[in-house]
Image (cartoon, rainbow over all chains, first blue to last red; front, top):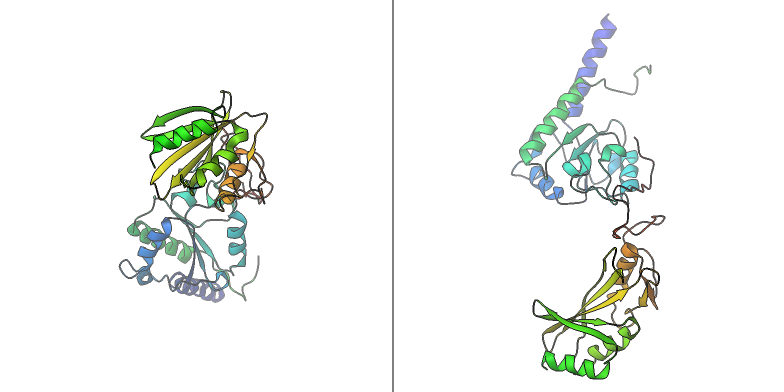
Length: 157
Length: 159
């Protein structure tokens, strides 16, 4: 009984800590990168919501922000970057091209990055307004808070 | 140098090789035979005509017509400030043409792009291989008969 209580509180505290320190890796390939920059820079400043710093190394980041069109030629690279990230990790699909392929329904473009890697939050828009991105970020934080957190001493089921 | 004079000189020198000269949007278009491409282009590149700049080089697929493919070359003369367009028809069965990579360095990559997208074989090209699409990609995607929904992923898709 007491054990369950401690475990639940610890889970809550871990979720609280993780959702407010989302160090992110920007995987930017196209025009959505401009919107990412304006969201991340001082005017909209998504660090206010606890996104942390931009980490240009997948091994030190918690959130993969995929901005822009992913072609079939680039797909193995994105997969490798995702595999290099350490747990826990989340993926944000930023813009219509990453959500569904967008207007590029052709031979070269992957029809949504969820065909390559699992995605936690989809942000549509071509490109999405910074407000949309912030809304998506808050929704991702709610999701992280409600998640069953994994930690090192936890019993595996 | 008047442009009319250039066309006249060309007609005089390569009379039977030039099929037609037309004008569109103020620029002359030369329709020429395939085997005389290098001679005509070299003649235009030299002084006094000095069409020394290759602006662009591309291909068009007119499916259902004969010849099916058409190569388009855009030349620019810097001292005379003139443009000239050269078109060469290519049939599907014999899809070969001389490479201009020996005359212009930028023709190297432009011709690799045309090879990648249309499958035109350039004779004398130093390194004719795909430039945009990855190794193992089958078919030529900008041809009109390339399947619209055909996908060729490099890695296993999740669903």
